[in-house]
Length: 129
Image (cartoon, rainbow, N blue to C red; front, side, top):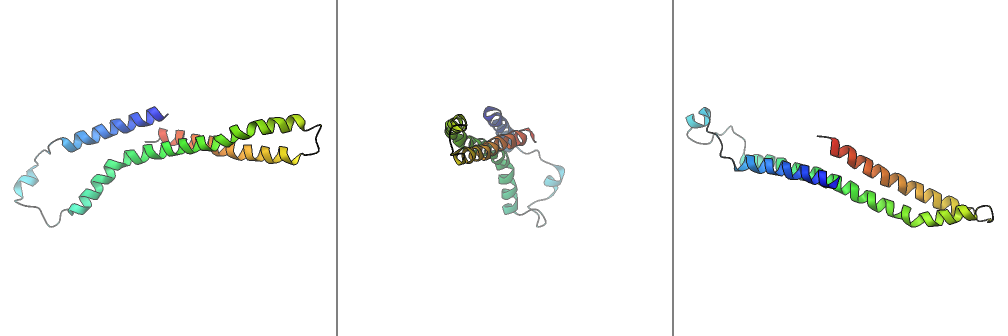
């Protein structure tokens, strides 16, 4: 997933760089006007639009990577608490301490849900255009 997202970002960046480096084709309207018109877009607005279109793919890929990284960090407590759950399940018939089992099961369920849903959202976002 990470490779695909980075590959898409690199292709989009290459396309944007190619469009920015290509010389603009002179149009008949541009040739007939001697200077910049007062009714045209301001330079600040043009720069803002240009930066926005340049950074959009990176924001998208960064968001996907952020969801995947948070998914990994949400799955770490599941890995840490899994042995405690296993021991609590094994000791359930012989022990009076059932609170440990239920607290551990709830912690694992919550973090498992958060980790899986984070990866699911990253997958969904990577398929969108």
